[in-house]
Length: 120
Ligand code: 5GP
Image (cartoon, rainbow, N blue to C red):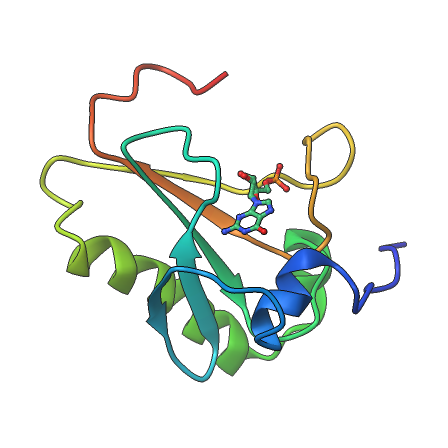
């Protein structure tokens, strides 16, 4: 079973405006902001506004409206940032072995240089 959602996680605090962030895009379903410790020239995180720990509970329990809204927001951010033609990478870490550090679903967008076969 998926762990319970922790309302004190950093991204919950960002969503409540308790911690500042460099917002790239926001709509009713999603918030996109710059990663505080970028691993590529462009490194953006996109999170759903709902209380989802990871891809697991999101994919299993979010409404189709939330899922569509989030997926479209990720694509919109990359498109608007001009990443489509040069290309970019999406990554979601899930759970312990996936090295997920923050227990609120987030998709990483990496871009701005040729990324190679994988990020370490
Ligand atoms: P994870 O390993 O959970 O997939 O990635 C968490 C990401 O969140 C890391 O890339 C880390 O740099 C980023 N991060 C952690 N704390 C903060 C924060 O307070 N603000 C922002 N913008 N990013 C954060």
